[in-house]
Image (cartoon, rainbow over all chains, first blue to last red; front, side, top):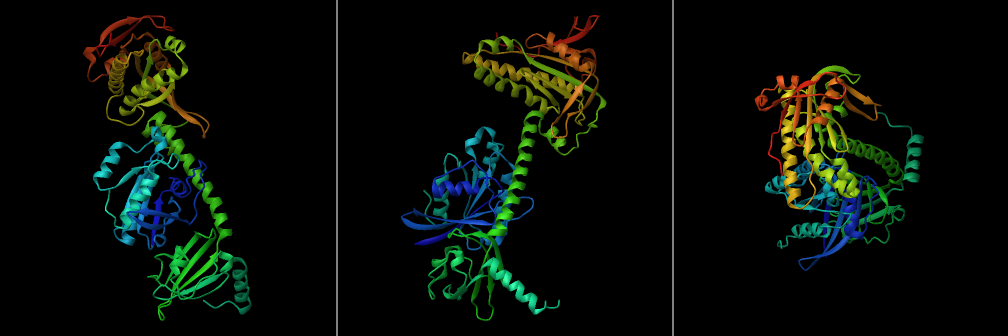
Length: 168
Length: 345
């Protein structure tokens, strides 16, 4: 079986842990519990007829007091960069983290998840910004760990890129 | 630096063994386990197979070995075994093997989590407050308030300013005959039509009271004339309201019209409230004057006082003169009226 390490990266409280919990356990809670260090989960998926064991590294969110150490990313095959659609500054943070990860690891498959789509009415991230990022080459999904929207798709899409499967 | 005495070294070693439960693995260059020992059981690790690939046995080590640096530390790793460890990786340059040391990190993890949780919750609360302020006052004012750098003395000062009141006509009868959900949905269509132009023209939203909005121009630094900014805002508000009305009329919904009053003169501006809960406010005769003008404005009409009209750089000639008797004023006053748009009828 293929094993792949996938890292969740983003600012604090954007929903990284909730996305992993939704994907692995199909559960969601509104209560915010900060992640310290890294929490590792496993999930097996089938992608392009191959069984893949995903090792999910859910890293602490970056804030003004602590930077994400790139040593946690060593061995990663893909990144899910997560931002909170209701806090536009978290998109800037996701971009910054992608750039730092690329400096440490080289080019690596990644997606940008704009999370909290269930709160679309309160979003600060504008459609214009999303269009601009897409034109810059970002692959973006609007996700909701609460409703589950596009969560499975996000992990599947990145897994396909990590194993070099042709995109559907 | 001199070595600590042997008794202290022994003491530190005892503390480490007792509190951190060290366990170790030696892994060869091919990634296979050479040997292991220490408190592996404490970390939920058992039955490791010497000679077999370590990544298959401990997947969290996937991709980490061999380490390119002489040493690497990953703090607070919550493993698949549901334990929390600090992972130290040392690279033996001579033999080429890697040493993995696991140290119990639960106690430090819990302390750090409690502190980080509190810090992040405070940051989120502050960001939320900032968003609420942004939505009510406009981003620039909210930012200035958050940074304590609104360009006025918070204790109050006198400023030449232009005050604008905008209000929906016949809103009270509409709210009495309509279900509350419809009343709020309607307000949430009309209020942004009034707020957005204010913010776009460097106005400060002083208050929103039901269907009425009060704004102050001339406090935030701008080169444009405050009376002109206020009139430009009023024209845009009425245009927005007309568009909204056309849309609502086409859908068979009730529609409402706005009336606007503007006055210019010296007012006292400052912050009112406690440090935790305070807001910008303007007070004075010209605030009341603008409110009275708005009360007299007919649907789709902008009424301005003489001073506002005198200071206009554009549009002055479009206004028609009127004489009004306003509540609280003994003599009739000269005012100027503009109906900038053709309204739905």
